[in-house]
Length: 313
Image 1: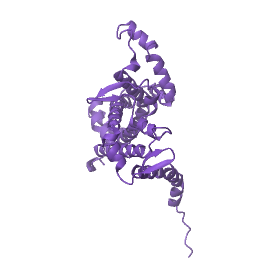
Image 2 (image 1 turned 90 degrees about the vertical axis):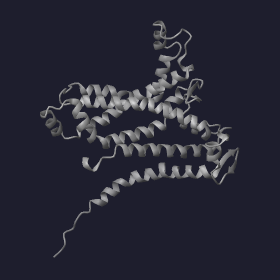
Image 3 (image 1 turned 60 degrees about the vertical axis):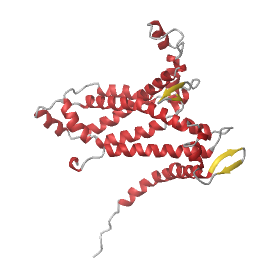
Image 4 (image 1 turned 45 degrees about the vertical axis):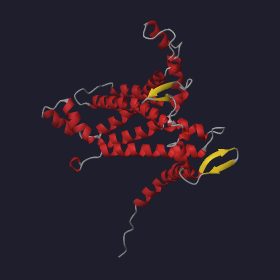
């Protein structure tokens, strides 16, 4: 008897995955290995001459030593502060709106329109948003003139010359741009939960608060895990909005240190990568490696906090 010819569908799956792995290897894995190598091999660049380090010199001198002047940790602190100031309200508001839009009791009819309006800031370019907020909050901006008229600020007040003002404004812009995107992802996760669970809870007399904490949050852990990790990765790589609103590098006190309120770690790395007198590829690579380690540790913490217990599966 002739054996029936079977189709191996598994190989087609690998075939479709090939483009992703090629892009990942070329644009992420190879640059990562190259950056790691630079952090150990190159100390600096003086014209065309490359000074080799062959060791941990970039880490001991520029990060933990006096040669770096503590600028990396100052930039790391301001990056963490900016991230937390937009990340915490982003998650809270996104969860609240997602639960509200998907609640079976309310059945909000124009929910789709609200979702579109809340998502729209995410499709506007960072440059456009930076120009918009700068025009609204500079000394002669519409909002600032209105606030001064109401007596909230003195007439000579300049938002972008105050460290705390720039800090809070950048954090708000990041929150405003991304909470809609996070809300859409969480809405999709909630809609993936079986409606029969909510119907059974309603029959038993459970209110919206009880169903949210007893049904929605436990079953939403995989989506929350994705949201928290991607938010951490994106937040710690913050660059465009702080760079575009960099008006005179105002100084702000954070943890007793003088920190340039608009200088994030990525901006610091860009400073030493760009051609010029400050170019130092090894130093920039060392900063990148430490930022990668910090991001990895935070991502693992989020992964651990949102890991589903065996009893929930």
